[in-house]
Length: 110
Image (cartoon, rainbow, N blue to C red; front, side):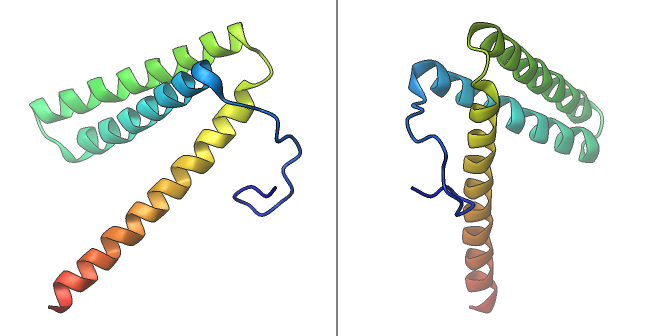
């Protein structure tokens, strides 16, 4: 079996399960809250900047608490969950960016 980087996956018996799913969900939520908050805080003004900072702080808190509680309960698998989440998010973002780029090129050429 091969992973996204086309190297041999050493452990194919790891299943994510419910807690892994919730962890990936919360880590993804935290990451996108951080990104949205940073974007809004940087480009916003007035009330929008305050909302952006709030989103940024909430994202950081959710990410740190999720990592801490998951590590406290099931130490040893967190780095695998985070790396898997990172690869899945990277693939999703690349796919979304390619789709948006194709859409924009198609709209601008017509």
